[in-house]
Length: 302
Ligand SMILES: Cc1cc2nc3c(=O)[nH]c(=O)nc-3n(C[C@H](O)[C@H](O)[C@H](O)COP(=O)(O)OP(=O)(O)OC[C@H]3O[C@@H](n4cnc5c(N)ncnc54)[C@H](O)[C@@H]3O)c2cc1C
Image: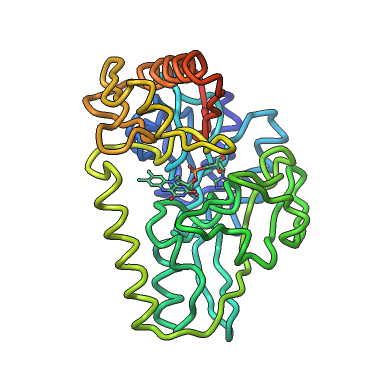
């Protein structure tokens, strides 16, 4: 990587917030992924300057949140990974409106909403991502989706221009928004919740947490549901009916507890997980004529 670029990047990024040759396995819930050339965890002020610097030097950059929907290749990532952390994670409640920085975790936002007696985001409390990642993915669970509670999102485009977009402009659908194709960076989210009762909200959150614990293989690293739900089917059921429960490639396995989850059972590589996903897709296609589409996003060199 160009030395002049690196020196400038070091100057623009606060001490302690820039990491060179950083193993991405420490930044993904799959616990796989080779080194990123550089990883930075900027503040809201540093972010536009870092993006501008990457543009100036023609260095590719990638935005990540908590890495809970990512499969990063074993050879890592050439360029700069910009990780949105709690440095960009302020949460403010004004009446029934909640405004959160993109790096805030969904768990923290849900806890804060509960504290303020605001209902509507309980469904997301157990999703282990940032609100930025959740907007990009239109994350959802137990009948709720991010699109139901978002009123607007502040984004920055690759030229550093900021704009506030309405939920309609983000073109939400099942696990989809237009953010990746437009190369927007989510900076801040405004959500509209409703007045409720803190005790009932907390009780709902615990009930959903218990359901996750009983149904999902949370004791192993994973990225949640590996495949999207094909229309009219459940990915996990198709995989189970194809006889793939417990199917293993290297250290990667179709979870026995929930066939919709691929888990890192035993020191899996990204290549193990990728190959397992391909074999599962081929078997399900051959058995049922249904094409599974990954929900997990691939990043870097495999
Ligand atoms: C145990 C487990 C359970 C899960 N359960 C659910 C569930 O019930 N429902 C569900 O929908 N998902 C679930 N997931 C998947 C995952 O948590 C969600 O997709 C989550 O929204 C991803 O957020 P993240 O911050 O980790 O994003 P990342 O995985 O870091 O990134 C996801 C995508 O968003 C982009 N991105 C992230 N932040 C930004 C930003 N600020 N600006 C622009 N682009 C950005 C990244 O480039 C990438 O393309 C689960 C995962 C695990 C491990």
